[in-house]
Length: 157
Image (tube, rainbow, N blue to C red; front, side, top):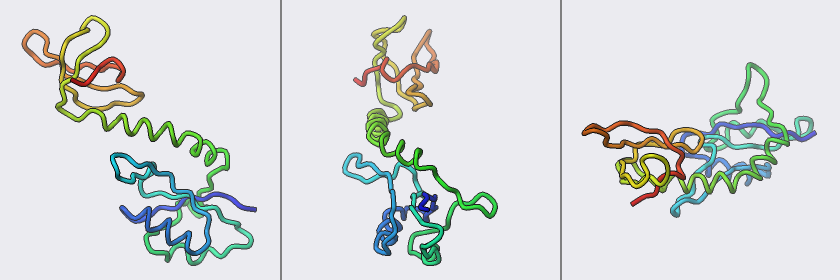
């Protein structure tokens, strides 16, 4: 029976690993996005490989150029359920859109608050937090204070 397994690659060698494994007729899933003309892996240093644990030869995989090792928990290889692979494939486009949006603000950019008590005020973008939230610096009473807002509450100037 075929199952998906997780492979860790050497740093910056996801594409090389995927190509070399594909050349050896393995089924590879390498989620990636093209952002600003550059291919970016959605899971840096990781690939998914579909293998039949009864009939396929696993020996050449570890010696494939770019592959570091299988991900294991003790002596057990990390299996990834088909549901997870399918979900990643479905969510891949949304993830790409989020990654493009993440690139829209850089530290130090001036933004304008669009909602709430500080509507119309300018602030300095600091960083992205989890769950589509951002940290900004707002000058209040002569001092910069860090405020966390939803990303859609500010607009780049």
